[in-house]
Picture 1 (cartoon, rainbow, N blue to C red):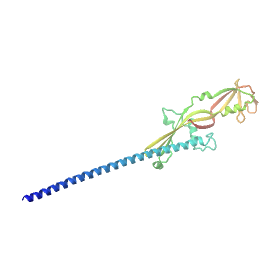
Picture 2 (picture 1 turned 90 degrees about the vertical axis):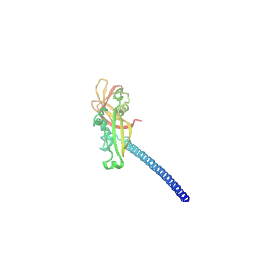
Picture 3 (picture 1 turned 180 degrees about the vertical axis):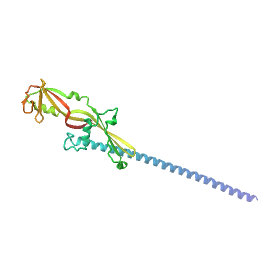
Picture 4 (picture 1 turned 30 degrees about the horizontal axis):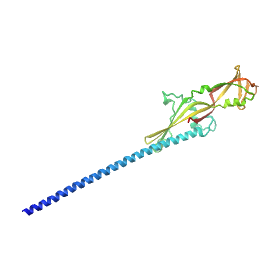
Length: 256
């Protein structure tokens, strides 16, 4: 009887050890599973952040690239007048000149949507794959322009070059900002470039007595009544006035 009890005790102890081992194995397995899930979550989080950074870089590169295209259009092609035959009617240069000339309304900071140009650079289907581009333009009149709009000069013995310098004088008319915003997969980046609009105006001349004087633009010669008429003598005081309603040349340069 005692021998049978001893055998049952040994069997019981063996079963307890096996049960404890099984519990330990399950705990270790759960620990490894928890660690594996944690690693998967961390990897997914890192991948998500990497994709987000990649999308941010894509939108930045897209905005910068399009801004460079616009910059070449405004400064690299050396256009002189939006009405010239070599300027395409749909060029950004022509649109910018028309915008600054008030064709689309004067900029009003209280009503920006009415005076800011919005341009989408991709079709609806392409936007999903390549992103979308929007361009906004702002303008601010150069407050110092009025000081340059008129002047007085006494004609020297060879004054033609002085008159030609007056005719070709480029005046800083507007500060002009182009903001390019690129958006891809909900991530956007904006790239701003500031320009100065430099223009050459038509000019009217009068002498010191207020008599009208006609200028021959090709030579800088000054005459009374009409070109080829009575020339204006050296020593005459001449008053000149720039006429902003007539622009002969328009170009853009970066503000900095």
